[in-house]
Image: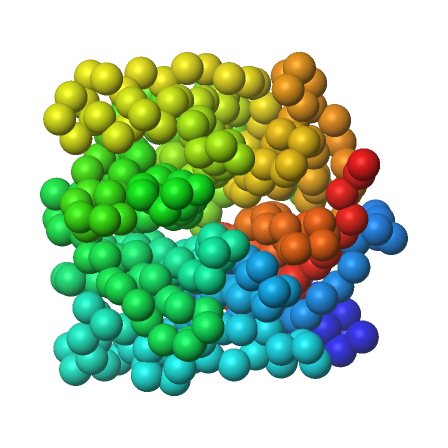
Length: 388
């Protein structure tokens, strides 16, 4: 109720200001103030789905979520529009969070970037992934506000869930994670031999990491399959999503999913409708033979953020323009699953050991990237039961 009252007050304040100041009481000023007030207020919609249950709410923007084999929930908070106090956290049973694996790994701050090492601290964590075999993997593109990467910051961090300690750090050099790169999400091969990433920065591409040797390489970098689609416009709340200067968001390879046998990788650009796939064997060979990586168009969908493949080989899509979740079947047919106004730009999926699906609402369209301040900051983790 507090948030609803405060946002309504913005509109009231604008009207009072106009009425109280004769010098401002002209049509143009009234229109300007009204429009400015509206920019600060999230669209009010009432479409909710009872199947979508709230798990926890947070004080800061959340993107990634993952659940371990024993049911522990982990989330991450990217350092985008604010200098967040915690980058990676475990969600406790009462909904509270604790920095993970400890306070020190979460100690990096924008103001202290020259004092704290980026090599062994979280800088801008974008995603987390529990592999079901005892490890939590943390993707750190190390690019505050999605801008230039911090020197020595891009990395993949492996954490032992039994000891709650960092097991290994995989740093990425500038040949893999350049100044304008933004490593987005990761999937780990079932045999833990390779890790596969999307890079939504410039240029977009895929990244492959040999988890044994630590060697990494780019694949399909600047390839049409990993770039935003020029004819696609992201729609939210029934209109094109635009920054204050009129630019639309142009995000490259973002969504990623790996088949259960680890043989096929799926991905798509956020600003795009086409989903692609490729045999992981060819990605592994791309370090020596880049031409071996030949993407295949798999399906026509819509702008999405997260992907997830369940045990029935159905691909879940977090759909942007309708605050929803859809399912892509093996027959290529996309079926709506749920739509809920609370699911403001659904971001990441994960599935718990009991089959429950979890999804975050990142509220990107409500962020200071597109408004003067947060238009809606009800950052929430949800869960739902997938269809049989």
